[in-house]
Amino acid sequence: MGTGAVAKKVADAVNQQYQVEYAVAEVEERATVAVRGQKIDLTQRRREAQRATGLYIARALAVAVGSELDKLIGIVAVGGGSTLITQIMPGSLAPADPQWANAQGYWQAVGAS
Image (cartoon, rainbow, N blue to C red; front, top):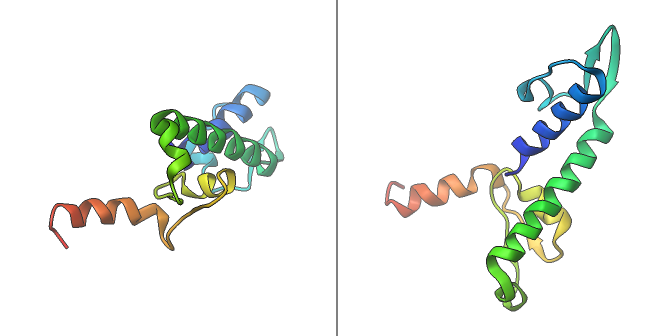
């Protein structure tokens, strides 16, 4: 859940509004797409998708952790959704390279440093 979910929401929004078939990969890193000869700006759709996804992740985290969430000093967010979490949840932070931080942690956990 994170950047992939955001891109899917953006693709779905464009596809639904314009009845075209953009794949997730086609909108993932782009600011605009072309529809019938017109450039369509994805900025607002992406912002809305980021906010919705961030709220979803925050709610899911709150449910999973339950009342223990209130006892935490902070949250270190890693992975593709980390920037969404830091925008939604006060006191959360992300490492310098959040996309790979979880993979590096798993790598170290298996003793493969």
